[in-house]
Length: 181
Image (spheres, rainbow, N blue to C red):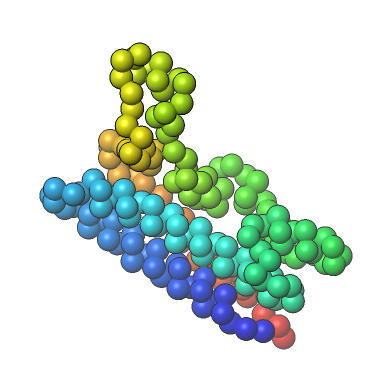
């Protein structure tokens, strides 16, 4: 079994840790671009943790001798397991975590998906709110900020650290069960 996805998972989690540390430094900064730095680190931490999760799903796929490149989400792995009439304790645990909207994994994936939500400033309701004479700029990029007023920066940093810790504990537990004897 190749170790490519194991290494990739670990690499992404290490990068997430580095970005969490950089986020903490950005929160302490008095730089003119402090808020932009904070927002960029928020998104990069979420991207790296979601990437680590996807790499871990592919790591599990490799263990069960599936093509890891066919795995984009947990449902892909579940489908392959169902088709081959196999059960996976790792997939069962991940499924429970993903389906529990209060679990660290569900919260992390939801926050990551939030990075992809955009505010439509050109739709009919936006034009009505802007008034008949005002037309929003088409060149503006409007994103939904994770924490627009930065009032919850310390709490979000604590949450990211907790997610990273939970993720590492999960990996250690599931990998010990996946070891071939």
